[in-house]
Amino acid sequence: MHKRKRKISVVRIVRAVSQVLFFLLLPGLYISAFSGVKQIVLSILHHSFDPATLLPQIVAALVVLPVTFVLGRFFCGWMCAFGSLGDFVYEITAKLRGRAPRIGEKADRALKFVKYIWLALLVWLVWVSGSGAFASANPWDAFGMLLTVGKAPAIGFVLTSLLPAFLLLVGILVGSAFVRRFFCRYLCPLGAIFAVFSKARITAIRKERTSCGSCRACTNACPMGIPLYRKDTCRSGECIDCLACVSACPRGNAELIVSGGSVRPIVAGATVTAAIAGLYYAGSFSAGLLGTNAVAAVGASSSTLSSVSSQAASSQATASSDSSSAAQSGQTSTASSPASSASTAPSANAASKYKDGTYQGSGTGFRGGTTTVSVTVQGGKITNVRIVSTNDDQQFFERAYPSVTQSILRSQTPQVDAVSGATYSSRGIMQAVANALGKAV
Image 1 (cartoon, one colour):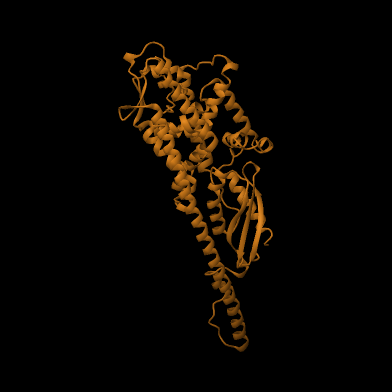
Image 2 (cartoon, one colour):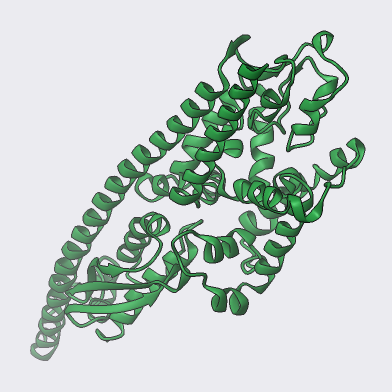
């Protein structure tokens, strides 16, 4: 029995260490994954699949979703910062609240449908229709600005610009103090997606009921409220693979299986989380290189277009002069009219929208971090946007920079679409470019 208790403590410690590490190193991974799902859906709906723009935004989703489909929701149980926050709050408040209230199985089952309703509303009202009604009501934004380790809480900004999100976050934290994984069980839209995706996984919790006592320790330990005492094998989409049931079983009857074979919980948890982290970093690096190359290519094409535009404008002016001379001498000119030239090349006015030169500007991004850019204008066109410095959150900034910059170079305006999941970082870049271009007018 002593040996079994030692194994239980090791499983819990390894999982707790994993949660803390990912809370510190990748606190926004769950936001990136959810935003990636959104971008995939929108790309399908709009038939838009530009790899250089899309890949940096969907790396997390491309990593987490397949792993969840095959192996289950280890991401939720071992890596998700928002889920870990709920665990931390529940454990910290344990002594203050005393015994936590129990939610009946029927009520728990009904409440779990709320997250699916919430997901459907988000997809329809926000993703498809593009409504900004919930822009200031995202508790994940409030969490990122208030509770990111190593950053001063942006209290003023949250209370003035994200008050609904702040109130929702407070409500979630209060709920988490009394119900384990309150948000994950009942409200998380990403959890709703994972619950569906993980139903076909090859992992499961096996516990032969014929070998069970009457303790229901596994059910009582489950943070998702799954009635494990009713099952011999659990593949519920609600299972987050935290393995608390395996650790809690006093008889050693509960075990994790993969394709029917028993595996060590520590090995499984550590392997899956390491694989997700490694694939995410590798994917982010590759997507970053692709985005940087795309930005350079678009900048080069903008420079070429500037040259072509200048030549077209010069030819247009010459054609107008020739036409005028021909009219005075009674001859007929074969040169194209300005109207017809404008249909095949940018006009002189369009080409001279900005004065040539290099200009610096600054903007405010995530958590109030300042981003300074250097914008190069040639032939009246924006040909390069270079980051001089930034105090923005690195993870979100790196997601926003390639896509936003590429869009600015293509559209020749700082007013472009923000990168989903890195909205504030995107706005900081756009604001900085707009500030720089204000000096070029």
